[in-house]
Image (tube, rainbow, N blue to C red; front, side, top):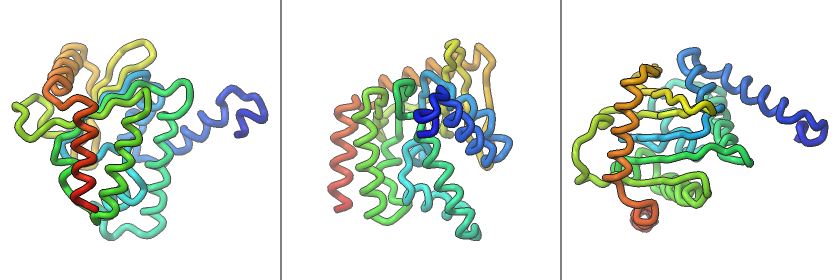
Length: 212
């Protein structure tokens, strides 16, 4: 709103995004910077809904499950910061986002049925965005290179791609050209083996019915 009123061409938005990024551990700051400027984001998750698409209640369940001694303020800050990341999905400059989720992600109720139902509904709504495609990789899909961990491939405005691999309390940044090409090829295989976006939406809707 300040940018609109003062005609500052996104300056306040960039400052706000930088402030949010500084609240993350230093290991994640480069990843967050790459995400903010990306023109294409490819997400793969074998375990949980990726952070960009988490509802506040789902994010709370994820955070408190991993940090049961966190204070109320810490939980609130985590949820606020995670929700703020979604700003990149809006506006004329929104990146193209491709998401492949293991079927276990929509089947696993790591929160209450009500919270999971709302999370799946949010996934369906996000999948309707013209810049977002969400696919489900079925249980019977063949083995693949990325099976063991969540991976994000971030493509910059210059079309250089960086691979971000999340592990326990850390994130690995891979930009070696050969490794990046291998990861892109593996991601293409995932999208080929996954259900179409339309069939994936049907499967998510069916899972929602089981939670009603």
